[in-house]
Amino acid sequence: MRRLLPQLLITWVAVSGLASAGAPTKKTPVKTATVKKAQPAPKKTAYAPRTRRISRSPWTVPTYAPSTEGDNVDGEDLAVRRAAVEALGPYNGTVVAVDPQSGRILAMVNQRLALTSGFQPCSTVKIFAALAALSEGIIGRDTLFRLTRRTRIDLTEALAHSNNPYFANLGIKLGYERFSYYARLFGLGERAGLGMEGESAGILAASTPKNGGMGMMTSFGEGISLTPLQLSAFLSAISNGGTLYYLQYPRSEQEVEAFVPRVKRHLDIAQWIDDIKPGMIGAVEYGTARRAYHNAEAPICGKTGTCTDKTTHLGWFGSFSDFGQSKLVVVVLMTGGKGVSGPEAAEIAGAVYRRLYEQNYFASRRMFSPAILAPR
Image (cartoon, rainbow, N blue to C red; front, top):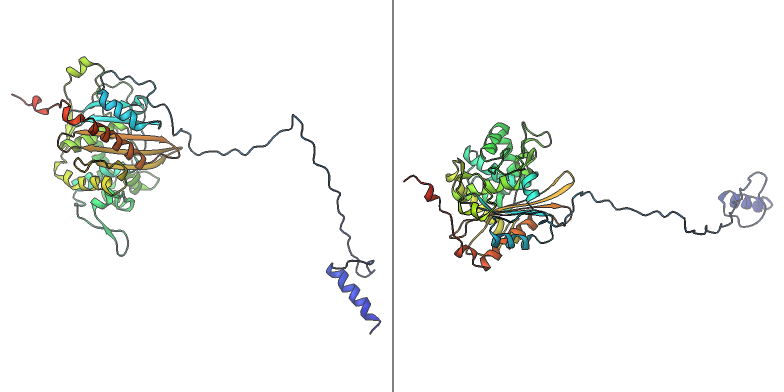
C-alpha cells in the first residue's frame, strides 16, 4: 500500500490539472497548453480605416432653428411681434398671437410652420374633450373620477395636472360619434383662417383610432392633426364667450384700418366656460404650466401638451388672458428633440405676456369692439 500511495497521488494531481512538474502517466495523459507568442500590433498607416461609434438621435427635426426666417411682418402688431420673437429665442417653433374679440392675428412667428403644418395636439385635446363631455352631461365640474382606491379627481384637477386616465375615461364614455361631432363643431378638420394661402386644414380621423382607441384620442390626440391657427381660433371662442371667428391676417396698414371681423359660427358653450377655466388657471398657477405664471392680477388660462409625432417631439401651450383690458390668445408650438415640452412652451408664452405687461401694452392698445357690428 505504501508503494502505491505516491503513484495514486501523482495520478490525482495530473487529472485535476494542478500538477506543476513531471511527465504524465500512461493511464492519465495530460494535455499540455500551448502558449502562443504575442504578435506585435500592426503599425498604423496613413490609410488605416478608423471605426467611430455614431450616436443616432430618434429626433429628425432640430430643436434650434432660425424661426423668423422668411417671415413677412407687414400688417402685424410690432409690439406683439417683438415680444413673441424675444420669448421664442433660438427654438424651432411658432408663436401665434390673436385678438379674441375679433379674430385678427396680431403676430405669427414662423409663418411657414403655423400655416402649412398640422401636428398631433398632445394633451391640448383635453380642452376639446372636456367641453364635449360637459355639453353631453357626462360630467360636471365637480364630478369625481376614481384613480386609485383612495384617490378621486375632478375636472379642475384633471385639467391642471393633465391627468390622462381621467380624459381617457371621458373618451370611452363619449364614443367616436359624439366626440367627432363636437371636435368638428370646434373647428378641427377645417381651415381656421379666411383666405390664407397655404393654410392646412389639419386632420380628424374618420373613425376610432386603432392605436389606443378613444382613450388615446381624448387624452393624447391620437388620430388628430391640429394646427396652431385652429387652436388659436378655438381658444378665442372660449375667451370671448362662444364666438368662433374666422382668423384674419392683415398684410398692410391699409388692411388693418379696413379690418372687419368675420364670424364663422356661434358655439353654445357659454354655460360651460366657467367649469373649465379654474382648471386652466390651475395649470398655470400650480400645475403643468406653472412656468408661464407671471402676474397674479391678470391670470392666464392655459393647457400644455407634450408628446411625440413620429420622429418629432412636440411641445404645445395654448393660452388666453381675458381679465380686464388683457384680451389676448397666445399659442406656442415647439418642434424638435431634447428640451422640447409643454412646460417649456408655457414658459415662452408666459414671457410674451410678461413683456407686454412691462411695456403697458394692454392699457395703451386700441381695442376692437364687436358692438360696431350690431345692427342700428
